[in-house]
Length: 230
Image (tube, rainbow, N blue to C red; front, side, top):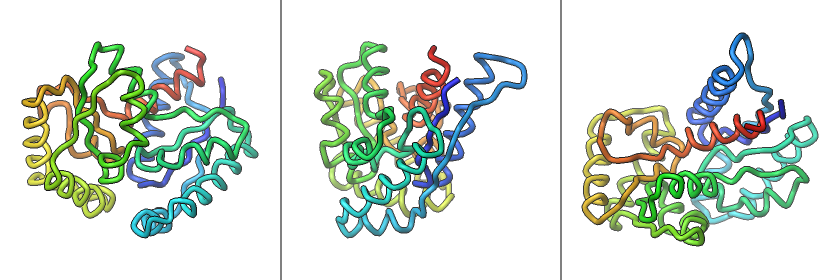
């Protein structure tokens, strides 16, 4: 079994989900008392969020690159950035180490294409929805990307940072997200990419019949399978 390096803490609530999913998959595959071999470097999210808000992406990249090097020195065979938004600096992080980086957007593209979906809606932070570091990966794989309008993007971003990253789950916010999802389906979205690791804490499969891709679940499952060479 390979050792998984987790670069987490963005937020720690969603990093908990990564750890749970990875270990559940390993247990399902191997049975018995088996669990995953993992290393976790968890950043202080306040530092990262400040860098995001002030546009200091190079500083954020340096923080994550340092964490990546620590994981490599600790013996990780490959690594994950346990958040969608910070894949904006994935190239700099990957360049800082000699171990592979399992890219979340590539994992998401693989699953969309496996399901035959070539038109997908992307929900996430404002950075993820409005910049091309994430959608560009999907588009290069032949997937058309839809995003909510400006007002809804603002609402989604606020819920992520002011509620979900603070550990708060609000039913009114859930209903707002579901309304946005319905609108995107009406525009022809074949699947809804939950492109923020916290959104899956709010919008659950039982809340809608829309085909949803929980990127936390996809990324963590892919990591477990990579560790087991499945």
